[in-house]
Length: 463
Image (cartoon, rainbow, N blue to C red; front, side, top):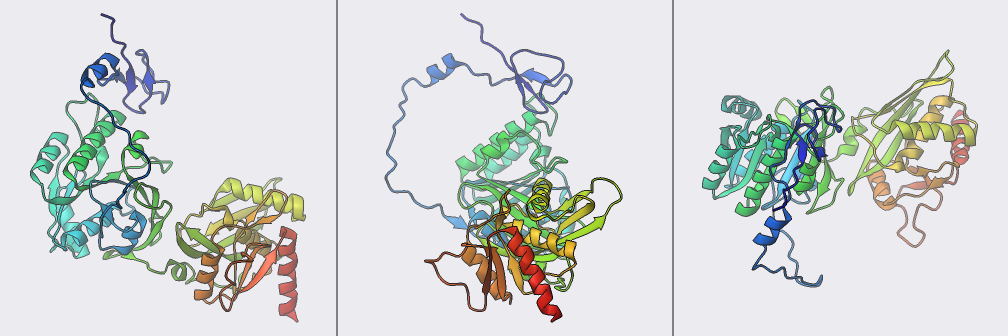
């Protein structure tokens, strides 16, 4: 009988090796390789498959939409796609102290108050600590089942007895420990094995499972990447602990759209929903300051208006410093190069500081035009029109390109009282609906057209 080949897996990063070595090639850790106890054995798989057949069906057929249950928090339900789905696994990650446990405790309490059985299992805090938080948040009367445990066997055994539970919260997956796995708690092997066991339990019993996940110093979810593939929904809870705003962002959703966001404000009574984030992000805006522009963005299906701010400072050295908060630093460098090469705007001898007010991070290229307007305004000292919003993508030759969902962006701008919008030429659909009432479009084909328009606006004010 041929000897079964063994493979070794790193307990820290999950890298696979055909033989044992002292130092892992993936993460550089020493003595972290261990034999994979679940090594692939084709003969064993063939033996188990005898007597079974796999039936294939066509793509056409009846497909029922999954039933959902509202958590009672509209912003949370929005990101999930309308509520939690039975037998689904949800992974929530975020920086330490950002409010993950607070958010999930509030959601668990809301759902429990509707008569549903909800369990909250913490491996990081004692029951007394959770009760103190519940008292501070005014949730002590919610019938949530609490427990503090880290042993996987105890948790699975307890869940077997709770047949009527609809939601289980595990805080956090990195603290759960399986004594049958030869690895330390929080390691890649432990996280993968424990998550698989809990997800299988949720799928078989029909309850929704929420797992809290730690993040690395780079903001990525800690543990093996396979963890994100195993779950149905991946959510990121973002924000600056020195700022009151918190953003719940969907990165993966098998039951709904991705890139949806929910906006919250951290208060003394917990997290409060923000139904109109655009008005909140622009509440402290002063339209008469140079270097400021309003960007009409889109987060998932929600239009959001926010202020982008640019500041230039002359430097005595050859090259200036670039500091960015809330946007991609590489895209800022590209935009500065386009302004220099295509428009003659020399900013190489300046320190450039860019900030997205409100703590929201912009990911779509539609912000190019608003950021270019803020940079041009900061360079010339001419404030942008306080009643104008900007959105559009900029190419390397300086041309402006239309972006998606123009109508939604314009409607949000009109709702908040803006009277004009700077857009790429041809952005509005000629065969589509006209711009909302009260909105005038200023169309630009090239960045040079924007510079000319801003100079003309300044000259008009002086007259």
